[in-house]
Image (cartoon, rainbow, N blue to C red; front, side, top):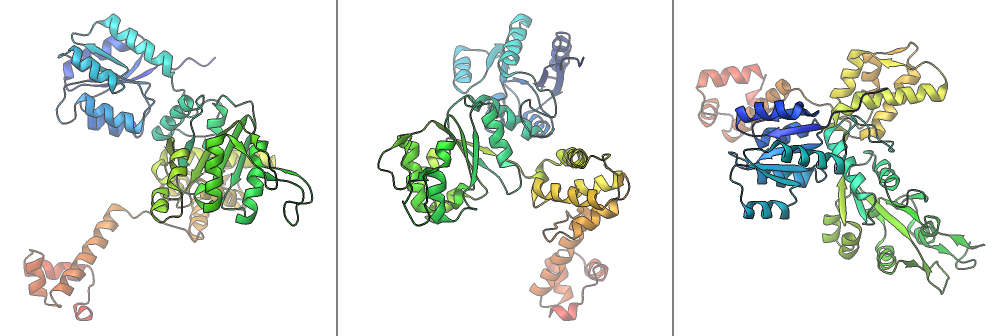
Length: 447
């Protein structure tokens, strides 16, 4: 049987001796503790690691505990924060409580009070089990993704409308399914539609349904997706592509909780959880009068932003092997694995098409691999054959490119006069000549 995970505590304090003392105490009570001595380091750590509770000092240099909490509340709103201070006062405690601090304890730390606060935080928010959240199809070990899934656990049981934003291929529908699975209507249907994939003249009928004879081709009554999703979740993907005339009707449905199918006179009450998604910037669409502001605020009660795959690189190898394993199961053959250099090629690629592109590449290399090991050459060929290929430049190459472009611009400003260019670059003439030669710049061609 797998041992239960220890709750993970991130301890933040600029007093090193107190960090050591508290670590010993907390670990002896069955917790796993990670310590940092400032708020900025804590935020950096949270980008790649997950914790169940943050225990932080209030008074710290550069970023104090309240400033840290504001950042945590913005980025990881489901992560409980316990505040410690040697300057405890009723106003401090009241202000901390108002801003959403889970608990406020004073120094010297009373161990019973500390352990009671930690236990309550864990009891309410639970313990991470690692790479996956139970009852979702999302595969991840990324800190930001795990925090996003934490929010879903809190938001699922509520009835608020949720807008998922993120680039194409990041898994917005999977996230919507996870919301449904954690919701009060999880036993009901999950119905999805891509608003940009249905012709505008048919979209109204698809959403609201129609009566026989309502228009040419309506040979029978048609039940729309809102009715199909009764007591369940309706996922409106690419909501930014919905025509303006339908946006008005959708807003009315959200306000009245009822629909009127095309050709019908009577209203039909609905009980549907709405989750929508878009890759577009709806704020810009509102300015350009392509999206209704009132509908935006109705849909965007809570916004969940999915990071692109390039910002969750720790998931690339995990997802690649997952897709390979799924193909093997589907084809009923032995799973093919990536050679180390092949996996390295996948991890350093920029993935402009995100997870969908990664899945396509894995499908391709698995199909073309005659052996059980996928080579780096095969991966490189698949990546370079992609018209959307964007390769990350190394730091050294980026420096060289910047330096060459800088020199060319300086020479253009100096009208090809090397001595004048050297003055503008604040380098002696000899060094400047060497740099020009190093980058094979033809000065005459610049004039």
